[in-house]
Length: 477
Image (cartoon, rainbow, N blue to C red; front, top):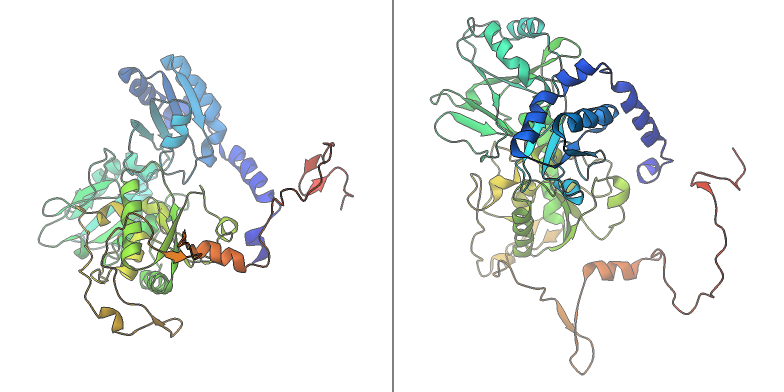
């Protein structure tokens, strides 16, 4: 467990080297095809953009300089490479793009297809090769009945091959539905009978059957996208085909076990008194609205909250806030399902927080990972009930600690400021009471202290040279 909170940084060095070795597209013609340079250049020139940000994930950074040079030569515009994104690489990093005054973003690699707030975006997923004949053969083995009702989804890097796969399977399977990408930022809630539009995909199923009566066949490797689909549509049996191994299988991930783990986190959120709201995105549309929505939910439930923006999360970062009982992560659907087993405190989603705090929100078979669905006007919005006098007298027992906890709701949905006031002196001076400050006072170690006027002033001298794990004045080994 100690390595979770401190390490020597070797992992970062090895990851950078692996990223360089992963690029096998050195020929110029391979770069043009994989990165769709002609389409990207047309996007820039058609709108007259002069400053464009090119966002790359870690595994594609080795090609970033060559792609930027080709884009500048083809468009005459200035290109800026965004490498180390502020949050997940699947989201468009609008904040980093605005730092260089970019007028648009070209996003390369896997994407969650969450709508952006400000800048125009072009997604270039990278055309990963797919053996459609082998994929079709795996599908036939998994679904030998030609009358099977199946929805075919794919990772975005294989979406270009679904048309060819449809030509191979369509004549033999009349009830198979192939999804299409929808990255225009329209609402993700289902619209109309049988029409499903979620997580950047759209497809139509038979209205009399519904999505829950279909199986799902996923083309792509195991990862956050597949996990998100399986939790959100947990009533559908899943199978997958991994293009890297060429093997198909019925998914063995125990969705019920995963759901039980998430429901345990809901119970932890019910026990929490202080909640940290983690800002996991600054580019997805509606993130400011959901932050205010989460704050209002916590106020109605009588819990304290602190908003924290710290970029990419790690156990070491969150371990600095011991006074926080539970964290809630506001992020895109793929990044919100964080496995917090190695963290000092659990991390939940906004939907799980509502299950814990809103008595009107009841558990159903639909698991919501897109926070926009929870906002007023969203397809899954549930308002708070009115506060009932005397409801706080009904005992509520924690299923984890066995202790009694408060069950009443605040009658004020969103107070403008904290009302935690206490008298400090006879002159009736008022001060705000902070749980974090009280917790800090109880610590035996509080970190670096200024000690103004107590430290003698000395002249500056040369400091150590080298890196933290091996300074030059330290003995090797």
